[in-house]
Image 1 (tube, each protein chain N blue to C red):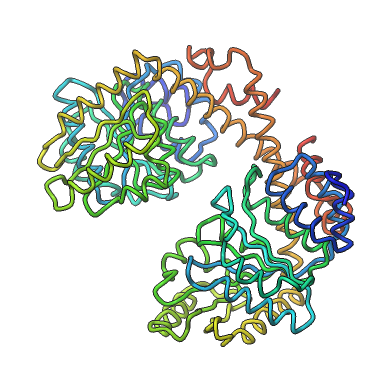
Image 2 (image 1 turned 90 degrees about the horizontal axis):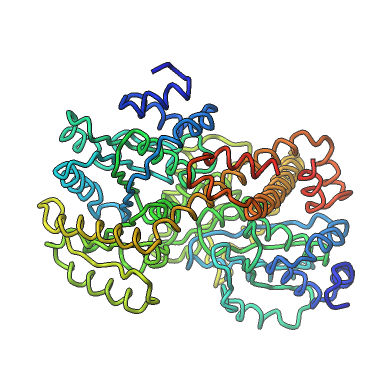
Length: 311
Length: 311
């Protein structure tokens, strides 16, 4: 891999160079100036990998579930990548979400790629960074990409909503369903999982969840509610099947294509808006005397904004 | 007041017409198309009213404190407005923050204006809407404007940071100091208040807070930490004095002018960015075939954003 040349990095990662994959994702994290060139070289190499989001409150067992899914995927011969994204923190601690444990199990398997990701420099935040990282993994030949998020805030919901199948995980005593409903998570979930189903209170969570879903509007796809005990592997094959079923439904119904097109549009809109914002800030910095005019009330903020935009 | 004509509304509110003030703030909430014209007519009439932010977790007694400050302000002959802003909700329930109670007390006093505010339509959210509402109240002759927010999220912190003096309120058992520190509130606070100081645990909150402040970086202004029992009026004169002292310090140190200039710049930048975003979305909607090109991988998202921006 030629250091720093985006096109060379894109070629290397498409040829299976894992260091090139890691390098490219770091470029996304750091908002490297070479990102547009990388994107231009990576995008034509993408093949439309399947993406699965795993979202839920801290402690519900998302990492264990992701690990269990990786194992099933490998048994079925799929090349799989896990991207653990922290939309709220500008830095990953390096040991996010049980990375090390999972790394050990799959360390020698070149068909598994596991990586934590934060947004050190990406101005648009994870909502813009995650789709780019996914395209890199896609171009690198991983046909199943699991996006694992850390919490249940708006940013996490946005990331989950940007996958083909969003799995929302709850557990007894954690990730209270009402709180999650407020975060708008019921609307984006394609599959619900109540993990740690061997614990007290699991049935209450299942009941509460089914009740809330029953109260909601009828949708073309009714998200199934599954019970798992991921650390014992229980319920994981059923989860795998539910994900496959949702994927198959969304494919044949045309929903997948619509979702992906809408996602691309939103992303371009966000990128364009971000560029416009940067341009506006630069124009403002160059607008000599504007603050003085504002302070002296010779111009009002709206008119000042107009002046900046029209530059 | 001539219905709907922004200039007439601005003239009426500057002449003391309370209905015109209410109407103008509604225009801000609704992002009325006449807003730029209103802003142009209102801004030259502003006089630089003093603004005080009151932020803290729900239940700490912000409304009671605001009410107590209104009473002191009236005793001192100030004209005072309270703007209760809910940055997270698109609608106010109408009874936000004990409005009705306070309204009753000051209902016949034309020198007190109390109003809840949400952002039904304002695209830039409360960060853009609140300063506009403040300018309207300023032009209407209120020389003290209290901005009360509902919680301790990022949006509330932003609103508080945009006042001359940000008062952060805690109470025993509520508004945990560590959580507030995470929200970045320690950095923006000019005065700390531990309200409900007659309750168990008040001393612990005071100690915890002083410890955290001690650990932080030294700043030119050291925020005082006061104890109040607002519903009994205890400590409120001391709070009034602390606000006055901060205002006086920030005025003579030049910090007030710098803060206000920086605030105007940020606001213009946000307004310009918002306009650019709207323009980008419109250009995107008009870009025939772009999604098809994206879907077929003939163009990548970065290049597509470039094409949209350059339109």
